[in-house]
Image (tube, rainbow, N blue to C red; front, side, top):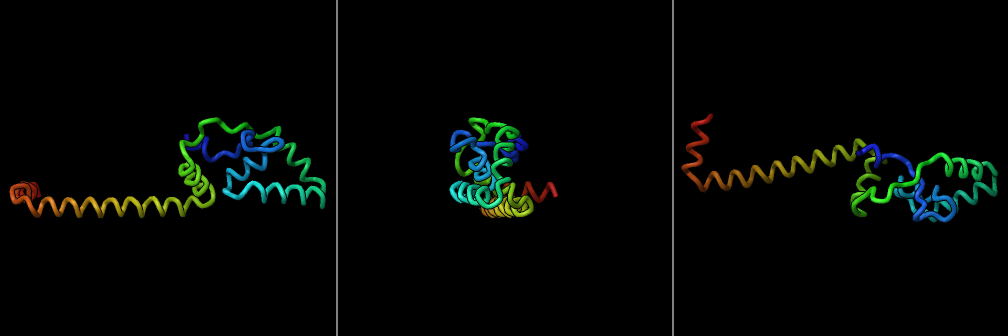
Length: 124
């Protein structure tokens, strides 16, 4: 399932010609307008980006309709594609925070319940 979200697609729904720039923008998180301007400028200067654009338009698959649930999920997967190690570090930090908060709740509950504290001590 995650490989679907880390693949480059052409985004025909948000695209102007074939959806290649919109797909690259969705993949990287860069504004599609800047990609389009860059593509046009490079095509005027060099010529070969137009060939690459149309080749990508024929090679890339169309973006599936319900690929992301919401905008937040799309931004998360853009972060995964940009820096997987940073994303893994952020997820580990979230789990550490959840673990710390759970330990605080457990400490609060156990400290106010002497019978449960005695049962836990018996198990140790």
